[in-house]
Length: 102
Image (cartoon, rainbow, N blue to C red; front, side, top):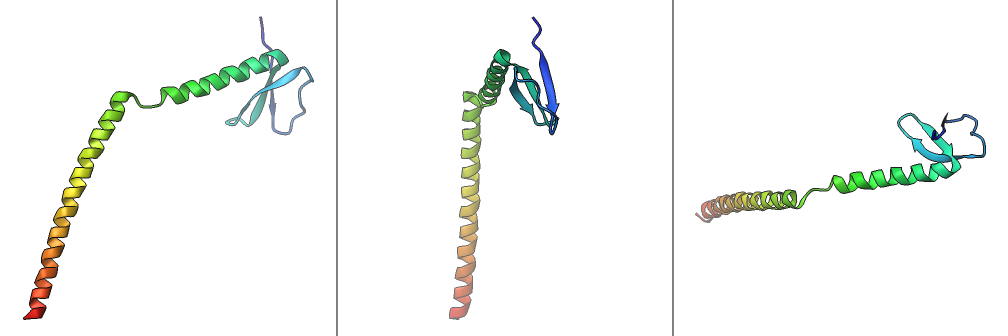
């Protein structure tokens, strides 16, 4: 069986009444129309494809655990840097206060 398809660009005349809107292709700026019972099928299949891509692109459990481990290490590293910086700052303030007291 052949499913007939009509492509119409922005500003063109609409297809006959028995064609229903299937989807809009934003890359080419055109709307694709199918025969009315098939346009709903095409819409549903495209929606399922979009949801499948979203589900498939989520990170796996192992990737999430690796991500958490890396960020724990980075947080510890940043805390040590901040701690060292605060110690140097305290020493500098004590030196300045010690010189002013003399």
